Length: 152
Image 1 (cartoon, rainbow, N blue to C red):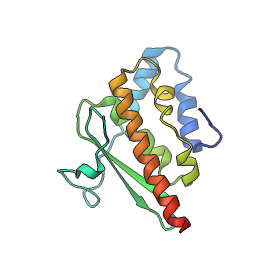
Image 2: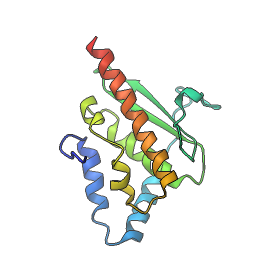
Image 3: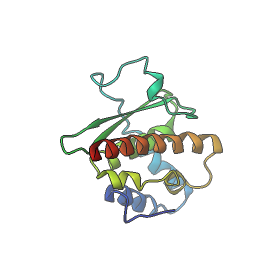
Image 4: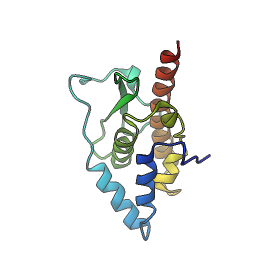
């Protein structure tokens, strides 16, 4: 279920921008432009070969996710996409890193896997959708763990 008000404002703004696309081709180009901003995680955080414990299940582009806590308990997210042709995975990685890093943890948890269809549309293949949804799931899992740890 889409709960835009509970999600980070940066994510809602990005979706709003994508919704201005006049047609499918323009939206695809906008997503490609987002993917071109992709940066791998810093080598101080992770280096190849990346550990399986950070691997996104079902992701065709071999993505890996990390988080680091800020002093205020919020998280910064980092995502490696190993497939150089993984444009959808890179666009999703940039979206999650840029829009969710530093956001309040309840807002991160308000981002559900349905965000993939909101960003990419229903035309995305089932295989790609599953991998991108799993990427969202890992970010949410890290936020949930951080929230639970800080409550103890």
